[in-house]
Image 1 (cartoon, rainbow, N blue to C red):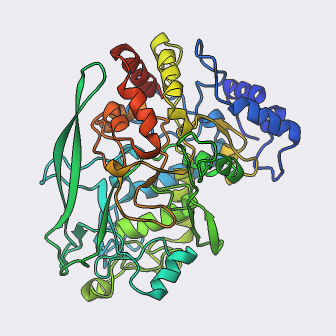
Image 2: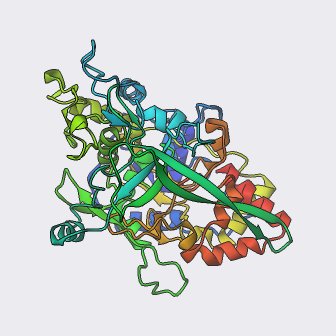
Length: 504
C-alpha cells in the first residue's frame, strides 16, 4: 500500500473520489460518473479571486514539498513507497554515471562514443533541469546540440517517412545529430556555430524589448562536407520533472484537445504527432521531445543514451551510436559490449532503472499561489488565450506504468499537442508528422525555478529567450493572437502575468 501524505490523500479524495486510494495501477475504464467528476475538476476556472482546490500540488500526490533550492528538480515522487526508493536511487546513479571509452579496466561503464555529446545523462540535463546555449564560442555546448537530417531522396525513403517507421532521414555522413566530442584517436564531427542578431520589439506602453534571433551553422566538420540539403535544428535539453505523469495522461484526453482543422475558428488548431513505437511495432501518440517525437519515457531514454553518449542498448544496439558508414574508423573503434550486460553496453535492466528514475522526478509544489499579483497574473494568462495551448489540468490513468502516477490530478500547463508557432520559431526541419513550423506545447510546471536550479533564465527549444517575456514575444502562428494581447498589456498587468509564470 502506498504511503500517501495526509495532504495528498485529501487532494486525491476530494478531486476524484475514494477509488483513487487503491494501491498500484488498476486496469479499468472510467465510469460515466467518474468521467463527469474528472471533467468537472479539469474544467478551466472562471474564479481568479483565490487559488483553485489542489492547485498547490501540480504533480498530485507525487508532488515534492522539498525546499525550493538547487536540488528542487531531483526529488523522488512524494508518494513513492520506501521499497521503491532504492530503484530510484540506483536509477539516479546510472543517470549520473560517467561513461569511459573502451577498452577499459571496467566492463560496467565502458563503451563511450566513439563520437558523443556528453559522458552522462546528467551532463545534458543539468541538475535534472534545463540546458542552455553556449555563452561564448569557447563555452561547451554540452546541454545543447544540433539535430541533423535531409529531405527524402528516393521512393524508399519517402515510404519510410510516410509510413512513420522513420521520423527523419539522417544526414549521410553525420547521422541524426552533430556529436562535438570524440574518444582519443578520433575526430569530433564538428562544432555548432552560433551567432545572434538583436531585434527590438516595442510594447504598447512604450517598453522596448530586444529579442535575439539566432543563426546556426557547423564549423570544422571532421568527416567531410555535409549534404547540400542538410537541415539543422538546435535543441536544448529540457527539464526532466513530471515525465511519468505526462506519460500517464490518457491518450483520449490529449486527442480531445486536438482541432487540426480549427473547426471552432479560434485560430488554435493543435495536432497529435504519430511516431513509431519500437516495442509495440506500431504508430503511437508522440508525447516527449520538442516535437513530440517519442511515445514514452523508455524509448526516449534508449534513443538519448545511444545518440548522445554512444551507448548500445536493447532498443538501439549500435555500439558506435550515431556513427554512419561514411565514418569507418568510428565503426571499427573498440566497444564495450559485454556478456553480463546482454551483450550490450547498457542492459535492459539498466535502461529500466534509468526510465524509472526519469518517470519519478517529482514536480515541485507551487509557490505564492495566493499572492494577489499572482492571482491577477493567472487571470491575464487565461484572458490572453495562453491556456488554449498551455492546458492547465489533466487526470492521469489508473493503469499507469507506475503506481506513483496512477489517477492523479496534475497541472502541467501543456496540451502535449503540436502547434504552428510561426516563422520566427520555425526550424524548417520536419520530424515525423511535425512540420518545420510546429512544436509541442512545452509544459510550464517548474518553470519559475529554472534560475534557482540551473542558474539561468533561458527558454524555448534553443534557449534564445533570455527571460519569460522574451519567450512570450517569440510566439507566433497559432499563438499570435495571444502574443498581441500580451504586447498590449500595461506594465502592471504584464508584471502580474510574469509573476504568475514564476509561481509555477
